[in-house]
Image 1 (cartoon, rainbow, N blue to C red):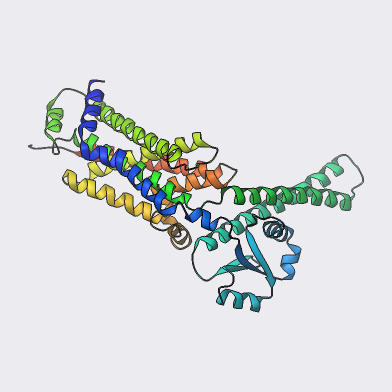
Image 2 (image 1 turned 45 degrees about the vertical axis):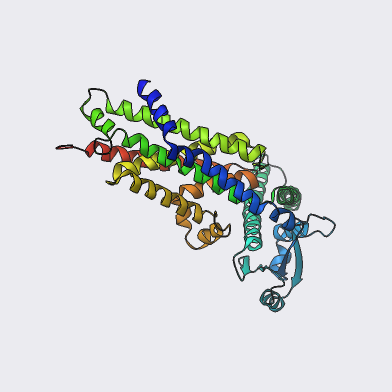
Length: 397
């Protein structure tokens, strides 16, 4: 407790740390608000022009057909797509003339064809992927349902009416399609706010900047980094207790900075993080832990002075935020398409993707995956740090 108390005092007396932890994210958030405040209003009422190629497979695919029909309903003033049904040659011409952002071609495998990567193209791709996932789920459910009904009929020695079983199953599938199209339409209309990715990356950046706090906490206990570390090295006090208490003080300081950032963006900038604010805060807390442990690992592994370590942490953080969409929101889609493994190991992308999944989707599967990934990343960083700490020996200081 003694070390914890004085570690907190040391952190709050460090003006550079206070700036990066508390001031910089708020300043950057203000600039984001100034830059993007009018974009949402200008883009909100625009529908996305797309083409769908008429094929026999499309006519037989009720899920895709009905869903895009619902999302393109002209009676809905907030419809997502302005859809043209054409043949393949005409769809290619429309795309070349940039009259549509892309077209859907349903053959053996449904595919989206686009010319460039952009916001509208990303929305079309993600909506289509969601539809295809639901289609597979419905197929699996229908097959199991028919098998179960036939199996029960055989067990009960009842006369099997296959047509009735199929008709019942089809009715259930139609209801599922209607529910799905309603949900996806409501979600698209209510939550389609692509500038939110900038605020997600802002939170991710603030979480990962906690690595600077973690680095300071460790440096204060390393004999080759500070005078305090030299005293710690020769003292009879448990080194692990000192490191844990210093790290905990850094973590609390980082959480305070994150809370202030949330309060500022919610009440001053009027950013809407959705209805699951508790889960948003939980993800930010775990993301902060990932940032802290990353700083601890860098401090233990890198044999350099403090300024160099700070530079490494900031560089890694900004590169991670760039890949997750901070400097251009299409970058996240480009990385997901061409180098998906980068976003799987990028903590900034894990944080932003977790926020994204909470905001846009009704299920928590993707959110939980990112949460577990961040915890795994934190554990890996701690193991790396502890391994190097155990090996450190000093012949002289």
